[in-house]
Amino acid sequence: MISRQLWLDRIRRAWLHRPIVWLSGVRRVGKTTLARMLPGARHLNCELPAAVRTLADPELFLGGQPSGAILVFDEIHRLPDPSLPLKIAADGYPNLRILATGSSTLAATRKFHDSLTGRKQAVHLCPVLWEECAEPFGVGDLDRRLLHGGLPEALLEEEKRPSSFSEWIDSFYARDILELFDVRNRQGFLSLFRLLLRWSGGQLDIGRVARRCELSRVTVGTYLEALQTAHAVHLLRPFHGGGTREIVARPKCYAFDTGFVTFEKGWDALRPEDRGILWEHLVLDSLRFRLSDDRIFYWRDKSGREVDFVIRRARDRVDLVECKLDPDELDGRAAKAFRAIYPAGENFLASPAVKEPYRIRRGGCVFTVRAPGPIAPPAGGMT
Image (cartoon, rainbow, N blue to C red; front, top):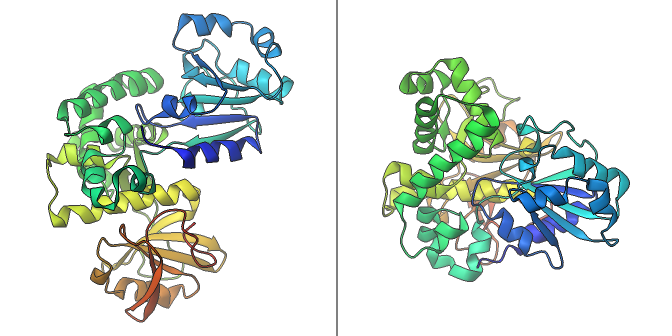
C-alpha cells in the first residue's frame, strides 16, 4: 500500500474551513482507499442498496451520529438525490465531518439540485505524486512511475498490463462519460480521448484535432469540457500580457496520467528522449497539488522559446519552473527572454534526484534546482 499522508493532511485542513469535503478524481485513483485511511470514519458505499436505505431519511441518520463523527459517502452520486444529505449535514449538523467522493466535479451530474456553495471544499485526488513514490520505491524507480503511471494498482504491478488500461478506458466511457454527460458517440469520443493521450503535453489545435477525429469543432469542444470535468485532461493556458510576440490563445493539453500516455503510444520501455515530456506531467501534478489551477500557466513566444510552467504570485511577480531530468541540460535562453518582459520572480528547475536545493546560473538567470515536494523553497517558491 502507498502512504497518502499528503492527501489525508489536505482533507483535514479542508475540514477546518468547511464541514463537507468533496473528493474527486478519476476511476481507480484511490479515493476509496484514501477514505478508509481516515481513523474512526464510518464508511457508506452509496452504490449498495443498504447505504441507499440508510440515507433515505438523512435527518434520522445524521441525528444519530456522535458529535465530531467522520462520515464517508463513497460514490454519493449514486443516491437518488445526492445533494440532500450533504445540504442537511452542512446546515443542521455542522459538528460532523463529511467526506463525499465521486469521479467528477460535484456539478457534473444532473442529480445534484444544490451546488452546496459555501458548504463544501473540493479536493482533486491526482495519481500518485512523485514525492509519494520516494519512500516506497526510491528515486531510481522514476521509469516505473513514468511507464506504469500513478494509479496505485497499476503502479504496484510488477509488469505493465495493457489489458488493464484498455479496460479502464472502456469503464471510464461507460460509467463516467456516458452516464454523467450522455455522450452517445462512443467511437468519436474515444478517438478524441486516445488522440489527446498520444499528443499529451503539446499545444492543442482544435481544428487539427477535429479533422483527425472526424468531429466538428463544436463537438470537440463539448467532449473536451466533459474530459476536463471528469479530470481526464487538463488544459494549461498560456501566460501573456507584456510582450507583442507571445502566444496568447492556444492552451497545452496534458493527460491525467503518464501510464495512459505511454500505453496509447505503445511504449513498453522508455528511451532517454521519452522521459522529458513525461517528467513535465509529474511536475505539473505536484504544482496542482499545491496551487489552484488559475495560477499555473506556460509561456511561449512566436520564436518558439518556451517556459514549462509559470506561476502567478502577485500583480507584478511571477515565478517560472523549468523541468529537466539532468540540470546540466538547461541553457536558460527561454527564461532570459521571459525575464526581459517579466523581471520580478523566482526561477526554479525541477529535477527528480535532487535531495537538497541548490542554485545555478544559466543564460544570465539564477535558478533554484530542487525536486517537487515538501522541501521548503526560498520565499515565494514552488510550494
